[in-house]
Length: 413
Image (cartoon, rainbow, N blue to C red):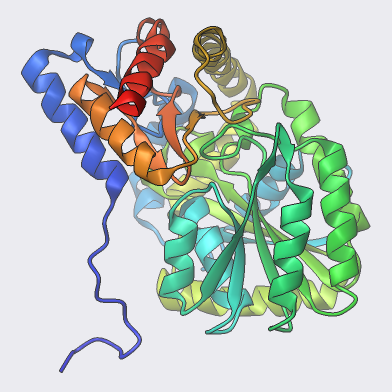
């Protein structure tokens, strides 16, 4: 006899990331911070090993009066000024010609969860990349969904063939298609699709939409740390070519954009040709938002609007410094990895680089061996994630060489 719903999964959640983070912290206390390479943390960290909290963001936040911080938002769909500014921010310099709406969510994860929960019916199948943020699968399971994966890479490119084959198989057994694409700055590989790859995806989804309604969930959590922001917003113009039976939901994260991970603020941006279909999804999302979290932080929304308008120059200047630091860290690691023959998945930009270990049994042994040498990383499917976002330049130097030596030893034994 159980007090939970019959369909509940009673297997305890195993948060492998936080488990390794804990081990890294314990190691720092034991052998000293300088002797530990902590490449686990998916947040931006300074060269001094402290989490980055932009002055341009938190000076403004601290100036918000306590009454605003205490108050509910104007609506459970989000403050109107916030919803308007999120849309402007997300599209950037892209000339979007689609009907749209914005629903405020608790972080980008709220937008992803909302979409997965409300687009598919229980028992249906979600399409995911094989190398991905683990919570996509957890959200699917929690919503009573199955999921299948497409191989993300064909060499150094997006694997369009696997993507197509996977979608077509799903369409054989259900009358709707929901696919997740985490782009640009893919977590955990740092890959960003080319505009041509996006054009091919949209063309294929339009073909699928002749048979079933299709939704693309584009998770852009890390977009604001793209190395070429103007280029990486322009890809959204490919969305203008979606057919009447296609919708794009863009999952946006203020948490990442503003280095305010704990404030839990984000948005789901709905894009479609037909305004009535946008409204239909909006209504369903509104009800779920009301039923689950009811209200997104009033002050967090106001803070985003203020920072990205009134304080835009200060914010961009501050963020640009850390994008340059990300470039420096990733370049060091990637250059050395190439020199020593440590294979990594194609990286373009962003918080993470992933070492290619296609055998998960070998990956697990390798992960343990790295920890024995006080190198702490995160296991992902077919690889080891290295968070260059939180590694100092000093710790990036020589890391690839050490990781290659450890991998060679694991393979030999």
